[in-house]
Image 1 (cartoon, rainbow over the protein chains, first blue to last red):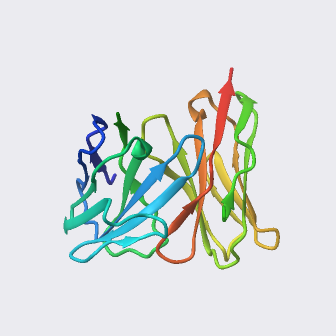
Image 2: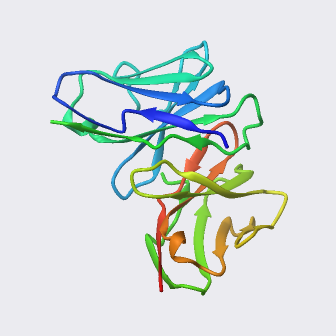
Image 3: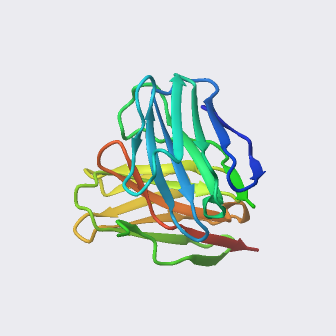
Length: 118
Length: 110
């Protein structure tokens, strides 16, 4: 089946530094990738929609200058948390939709990245 | 504003019995619903889905029921197995976005 690889799985960084998280679709082309953030005991919150070759679409309340998303190819999207703060500590998950299937197609999820900012 | 709600944060069921996970939504524009299963430190995996034109979809031990008038869907797992122990998220979509519920932790005990 389709696989989405997310790296790293865990990262600890100091306040003020930047962290890059990669999301790769391993055996399919993903024209659209999504980035989610999960808070403890809360839902998966959509942060942004990443479209290959164009600018990401951010959800309301998500700072685009803080969470930089780049979708440079059909198999890779990156999320960079800039000038990280302890409040940015969270579990970030990417997902991808295979090809140009309809929006009702299930998403394939990566295994997530646990970010801890000290 | 939580458009998709799972009011039971946890559920405990004995092995072999039926597990029923519930989900309510507020947006009548949602026309497709999915259930995902999630283990700790892993991303969600797709389980089963249903279109708003149907009221039931079955796949093996998993059945999803949709009641549009009540804006309610449920996931039935029967018989429940210990390996089903995980967090279950319902999700709804009307465009390109998936809106997730808060999840229900299911524990199946022997």
